Length: 130
Ligand SMILES: [Zn+2]
Image (cartoon, rainbow, N blue to C red; front, side, top):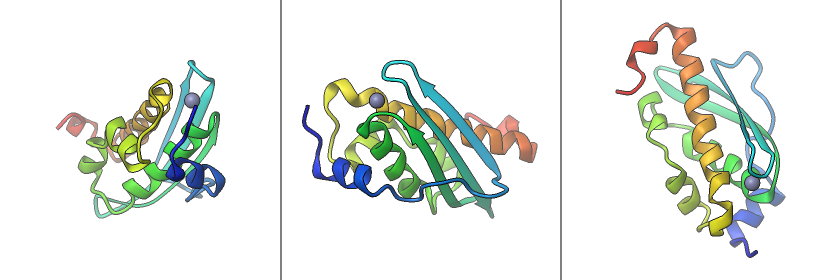
């Protein structure tokens, strides 16, 4: 298995690692395929992702995907965050080996979970799926 330089870079020095105190949304998703788990916390200000942090346990691809996802998220509107796909995550990492694509799906799923949590807390759940 060969990882891109970007995957190795993000795995070696993950960005936005940890947890936000008092987050506006939390996503907690597990991937049964290789036992990856990611917890994503987000802060939302004026309908934009102002901060995002993650904790992940799993394979290098899952850590790298979670790391780059926080970078892709920060600055997006909540609606834009929901449009982030696993292809975006994989492309931003310079591609993932085919048998590791599910790790980018984990990133997509955890973003969705965190945004849905935020919307439920904010009482705007009806807007999900816009
Ligand atoms: Zn994995």
